[in-house]
Length: 337
Image (cartoon, rainbow, N blue to C red; front, side):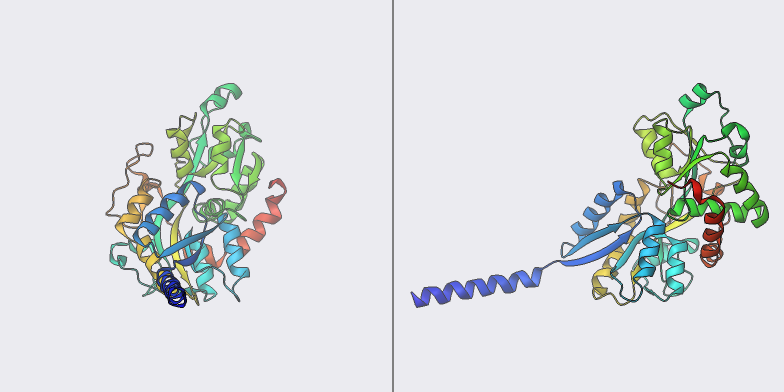
């Protein structure tokens, strides 16, 4: 009996030791990716690295950025996978990011990565400003289809437009920073004053305005291309309008948090994010990829889509982010819901 008991104990110890060897590393990953993307990206990475488990913390760009800054003395995140480059530049200025050169860095375009070597962040894809327009509501309300940003400031669109708040949405911030860069600061704020008269409400999500336009809640939603493409493919009554003055845009990027206790696992995720396999996942959602050699055809967008992106100064946007948001809140925050 004693011999049997010892054998059972030895087997149990062996199993416990074996399990400890194969225990998955839990990686806390902060993200502003759309909910529809999380499952696919997580499954692809974990299939390649079954010893690593991703635990998502997801919210809009502004909220995730504020959370990371609030936690700077005691970071919770190990990795950031899918956050605006302008937000990551703010975090880098606070010395919160661990520089790292992922395996496929040489295939990433210079415009889509941090300029330092090794970089603090590396791009995944580009998302850009898009106007979602509901032609059914156009007929019902006798509206003309807008073709430019300037058109959206016309009095006929009073209370007909919904857009994301730049204080909580990365899409909202890229809109505001792009207007200031495109029109100049004085004319940019003047434009937003006129646009504000036509805004029904500001919301906390970059994709929500497009969904609201598709549902007929508003005829016009200022959003970005991912929800517009997905909703059109689902049969929603939407037209995708790319304003003729040019499109504000952002790089969605990946970074490692400095001081993570899971550095090796974090580096594996950074390697995966920059890989061709990951780029093919991003290509299902976005037309411009950080690895420009990976094709990303989208029949819903014109062939010259990439040429419609404005010249965007991420460093300027990051350095002036607090000032821009403070001024925006002072002028317009009363319509945020």
